[in-house]
Every structure is written in C-alpha cells, then in structure tokens.
Image 1 (cartoon, rainbow, N blue to C red):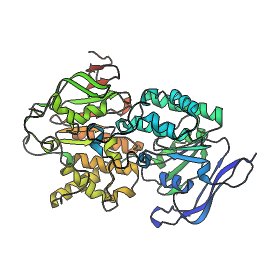
Image 2: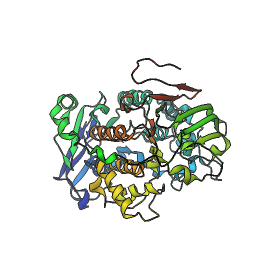
Image 3: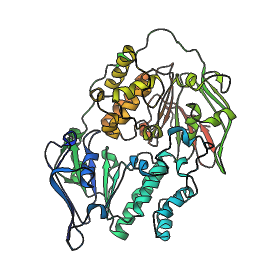
Image 4: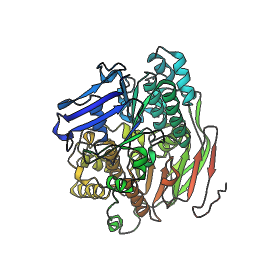
Length: 500
C-alpha cells in the first residue's frame, strides 16, 4: 500500500498577494492527523486552498496518490469545510441577515433532513452520523433557522456523508458548546477507526488541538515552518510565543469619554413574559429579563437554546418584538420609535452578522458603517467619523488593513474589523455574541482588555460565549437558556456559588 496520500511540492500561487515567503512543501501520509495553526492573518486558509486546488499555481504542484500509488484528483480524496461554505448552499445564496427572523416573508426553506437526503444515497449512513453528532432534532428544522453552531454541525455532517479520505475543517470548534465539541472529537476518533478517516484541522489556538492529532504545521506571516509532532509542539513554549506574541500596550486614554451622559435612561431593556414561536417550535417561553444601565451580563446556553433569537429582539431585527412586552432604553417597543432610534444606542456583533457581511468594500468603510447601522457604507462618513473608525481599528490591531477589501482578509481579521464597527459610535449597550469567535490567543487577550476597559459604570454589556474562561471580568450577572425552559441565574463573580 502506498504510504503518501497528498504532496504539496514547491507550490507558489499565481496571485502575488497570497504568495508565501518561500514555496510551500507539505506531505500528508496515511494514518496522519494534522493541525495547521498560527495567528490571524498568517495564511492558514490560503495554505488549505493551495492543498485543495482552489488557487492556481505559478510553479510547483499538488499530487494526490491512491492506495496503489496511482495519481488521482485531490477533490476525490480531500473534502474541506469552512464557515463560509454556507454560501454554497443554493437555498441560502439569496437570503439576507434578518430573514431568519422574518418567517412570514413568503420564502420557504427546506429542512435539514431533506438536504441531507438529497446529498446522499446511503440513508443508513445519514442516520448513523446524525445520531453520532446528536443532531436528530435538527432534521425537521428549516435550514435558514439554524443557529451559527447548528450550521457548523450541518456542514460537518454534510461533508462526512461524502466519505472523504481526508477531511479538512477550518476552525470547527468555534460556535459549538462544550458538549458538541466533545461529541465532535469523539466522532473524529470513531470515524478514523471505522473508516480510516484522516483529519486536518485549521485552528488559531493551541488549546483547540485535540489529542488525536499526530502532526502540527506552524504558519505565521505567510511562512510555513517545519512540521513537528503534536507532542513536541505542545511542549515548545518558545514556538508558541513566536507564533502568538504578547500584545503591545494599548493607550486606554483613547477610550475615555468627556462630558455628561447624552442619552438618559435607567433601563437598557425589560422583557416581560416574552414568548417567541416559529411554527411548532417554541424558542422562548415566558421569559422575564431586566438589564439596568451599567449592568454587565453573560448570556449562556447550548446551541439552539434561543440566544440569537433573544438578541434579535434587543437589536430590533426580529418583528416578533412588537407582539411582546419589551422596553428598550425606557421606551416600550411599538410606542413610535423607529428601528434606527433603537440601534443608535447599540453596538452589535454576532456570528450571523459576520456570515452575511459580504460587502466588497474597504475594511475602513466596514468599520465606518457602524455609525449608520448598515451592512455596507451607504452614507459618507465625516472626517471625524473616519478618524474615529481608524482609532478603533488601531485599538483592535487592524489599522494596517484599512485600504484592503473586507472580502480579501482572513476571517479572524474580518472579525476584528467588525468589532471596531461595533464600538465606533461608543454605544451605551454592547451586544457581543461570541466576539472572540475565530481569534488567536493574542487577539483574544486584546479584545477582552478593550471590553473590560470600555465597559465603565455607565455602559451596559450582554456577552455571549461557550467558553467560561472568555467571560470578561466585568461581567457579574448571568442569564442561562436551556432548550426545555429558561432559568434566570444571577451570580456574583466574586462568589463561587450561584443563587436563583
């Protein structure tokens, strides 16, 4: 049996802007499981695109060998999954961000089970995979109603249905709750033993490299470094520090605001007996929630528990808000305020927003669009607004990308630009739904520091994460959603116990 499966040999992309510092060489042998790791913007996704043949080569080649050693197309052996692959679903190509909440807009979407059945001739395999990944409850759910974590599960199972020999997953853990991450790792091990599946993970954090990985390929600044075993990589702190250097000191005086409060209110939001239902699915049931000015909340819950739906009510994206008793900034919803009256007090980022941000404009314009709460820059920023946008891009470490097209930078860099967008108008309420989604360890520290220094006594915060250690130190209250019912938990961050 031929040992080598895929060889990248002295590869140089034809496009100059994605060329590495030296030709790329990489060999994947039978039985190996790889992690490609490095900081945001290092070139990890470009490297995977070279491996899978998405980029034409100026020189070099990518060779794939079968069991007998005969050459065959890479596409017949290697399948890749990334968050942006959701664009390839024909049913969602023409959808828009708020459409998930607008169930009555006349357009119907197929359920997950139907899409799975259309993509496979092996129904028993579909049942096995959906049971193994514990997503049987998604089969009857329309695909446009999936949360970001559920979409990721959908894409992974869809790729496994095609029986790849090598499965490449770009940041597969982001957006997944702990239970789902554990199930996914167990599924990888099981499929490797049953079918010889080999895994290639693209990760931005060392802690995301599971034990089944045998080799690690470090990447930084469009340079591919020497591959090492997982054991040697995990023990090499010097290599970790080279890949993920400590952040520079930030000028926190830039966050200071002068003057008195310009928007007087006591309550950022009040929910009374809120009930949200789509068809036969009850998403939120009899929810009461009160966020006062200056309070800092963590919003927690498993994938599909209703967190994104709840936030859509706060951010004025969900029309069902008008059918419920909701007060925002001391004004009851439906009392004459416009969507823009609400949004101008809110800075918002979410995985769903990131997914639908497909504007081919400069990163500076994306950041500046936060002044107008649009998904593109349809109004011209003033000189002062341009300066403020660049200030926040500098704080988030992406000022050097100001003239780059948003669609040409890495997903981690896009997330930092969208974070700058959320902060540009210095909002009274920050809604940060998985803000560290896809960021490397250095950038996670940077963003947490910015949040903790920005959120003074007068600022309110709603923070969503599936990682306990990512919750900012300023957070001292929690709302946890569960699929069966909603529990309201308030806890003091200085205490080790939780009380209802």
